Structure formats: structure tokens, C-alpha cells
Image (cartoon, rainbow, N blue to C red; front, side, top):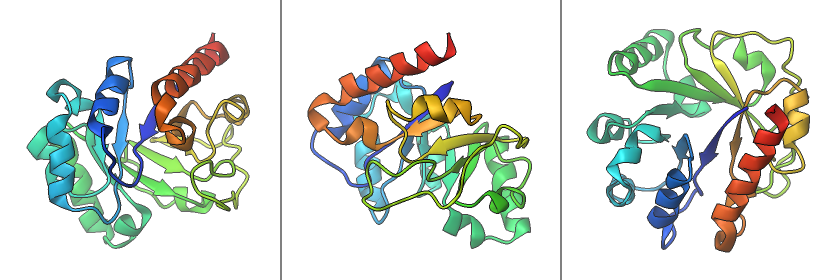
Length: 205
């Protein structure tokens, strides 16, 4: 089972140091998601991250950062994707792919998956379980995906933690994204992350 990590939505002191430490212990992919934050603030954080880790970072805002820093890719929020017509969306995907970058998006209903472009690299689907980081954010779908087949990867998000990973695996997820299970206690971020990695390894042995 593969995994990725979402950043907290706001910046905090010592964030770059923690991110460097997470990359150092093996974090394969970070989603840098900071809604309503400025380009300068994004840039400041990225400049504090070791350049060797840029190829593991996907940004949710400011597409220009992808080429400027040589990042892994661009994530289109559901709202950003819906703002584009099909021609614009295909042009954006083609441009990113030509530059060797990934493009993904988000959906919150199963039916939305069937209208996504087949040349996307992945889509997050959420929430799979009651959210750890957002109060009262509950699933509106039963995300059993064992019988769903798409050309892009499906990444389970929402409520992913020690108690839910096994169920997610049974439901067909082979890639998940963490947020609250790692970040809810800033004093034990590394320990939280490493415990989740161990759980994943135990599941897939």
C-alpha cells in the first residue's frame, strides 16, 4: 500500500524542519496544501526545504511553483477543475506531462470519477471515514472500490489512521493519504508517521 501526506492548511513555526525530517525517514510524497495563503509564503517555505526533496512535493495552489522549484506535480482542487472547460483541462494536463510532472484532482462523490479525464495520474476520493482533522466531516458515500477500474490511481483520504487502514485496504485502496493522524499532535509527528508506516508494512506483508 502506497501513501502520501497532506500538509496542515496553515503555516507554523518549525514546519520546514519537520517536513525535512519526514522526507529523511522516507516520506514519498507531500501534498503542500495551504488554502488562502500567499505565493510569497509558499515560496518561503519551499526555500527552507532541502532541494533534494522537491521531486516529492505536489502543490495545490500556484502552478508556477511546479516549474520554478522542479516539483513532482500539481493538484487541481475540485473547484479549480470545474472552473476549466475540457479543452483547458486537457491543455493543462498535457503541459504538465510534457514537463515530466504529475497532475491529479479531488472528488467527493463516486459519480464524479466517471467524468474525469483518463490521462490524469490520480484522484483523491474523500472522505472515506469520519475526518480526524475536521470536526463533523463525515462520509456521504460508501467507498468500496474493489470493483472500480480507472486508468488513474484512486487515493483514499479522510479519517485515515491506525484504526482505519486495514478497512481501507479491505475496501480496495492501495494508496492512501494522511493528515490528522500525523499532524494532530505536533510533538509526535515523526513517531505518528513511523507508526503508520509500520501498520502499512504489516498489512501488505
